[in-house]
Length: 228
Ligand SMILES: CC(C)(COP(=O)(O)OP(=O)(O)OC[C@H]1O[C@@H](n2cnc3c(N)ncnc32)[C@H](O)[C@@H]1OP(=O)(O)O)[C@@H](O)C(=O)NCCC(=O)NCCS
Image (cartoon, rainbow, N blue to C red; front, side, top):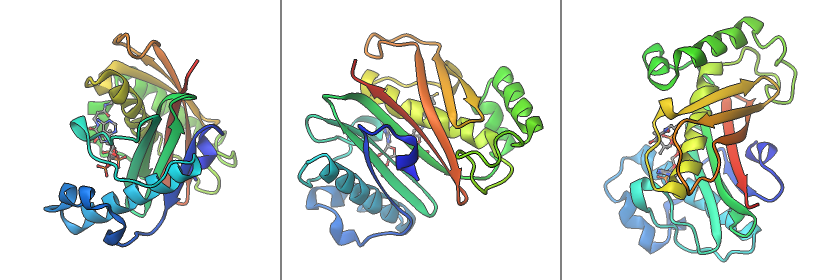
């Protein structure tokens, strides 16, 4: 699923089940020592996917520590991103020679709670979601982006897109980005564009492009920033 929305210069791996905790490296075990079972499973399988993806770009498996504000610390010369949601885990990585940053996010394909929507979307974005809803997937249904999943939860796609944007933004800038600081425009064909309302020299751009996909009850989004 995730590879369908990533460019060929990004390697990925995904899992719909979980792998044993023994796959963790000793250095990673303290990171989940006090975590509940659900958190342990997503962390372990997320790390497992990350190592599979890294192997695909020729990187020998090793520990992936947790860095500032929870961001994974990728092996030197690589960039990447991890995501997990119930029933799905994935990782995407690329050589830093070809990519500046990669962000991926997965969500269950269901509407956002209304209170959450108003926290993560501007009135203009909510109006755009309503317009997409009125077209009711009639355009989107049957496209590769939606497959057989029927009515689309555009609000959850917006949320996921913003999470992917943050996973590109933070490793580059080391700064928080508020949901109100990126304006996302979703195209029913399976892409989105984002306008960043804050500038940071490390980003070097005010616009980001991404892709989204709905399949088998899951949403996936991605943003991949190539090195010029
Ligand atoms: C960090 C955050 C993006 C994670 O997204 P999520 O949907 O909650 O969870 P996901 O399963 O998709 O992703 C979790 C993974 O993201 C990665 N991650 C966590 N913090 C990160 C950060 N600061 N930068 C990059 N990646 C990060 C980690 O790999 C984590 O998994 P792990 O702890 O098992 O290693 C989210 O919790 C968050 O803090 N969002 C607020 C900021 C934001 O999204 N702003 C919107 C800007 S438009």
